[in-house]
Image 1 (tube, rainbow, N blue to C red):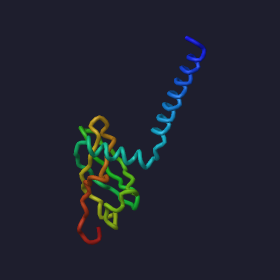
Image 2 (cartoon, rainbow, N blue to C red):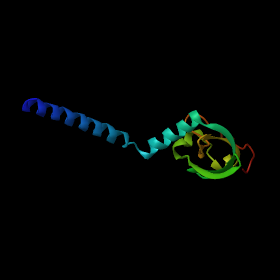
Image 3 (tube, one colour):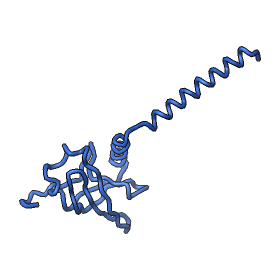
Image 4 (cartoon, rainbow, N blue to C red):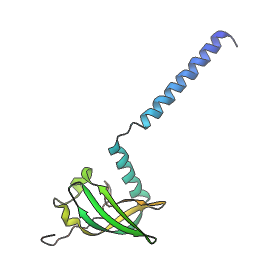
Length: 127
């Protein structure tokens, strides 16, 4: 192989490595909000249904507990990006709800996402 062919081959390999590095870097550059949205939608699509008890609700977070196969979980979900899907008074959400959880990791759960909601709004006054 001539010196010119070796240089051309090395340049080709270098271009491929740079393209691969850019591709890998772009995959890891997603924002936390995008990663959380992807997690919610994955749990929605692949998850199983269960029952939860919402124990506290603030403007930005829902706190809940549930049991799967005899194991008790306490969790919270950031709902700040989903406010349009919720009532004006989040306290009305306290009580029983449905949840979806990942079958291989039951600690990975959601109460609401962009395409689904397991929330039940209380219609009682003062709730």
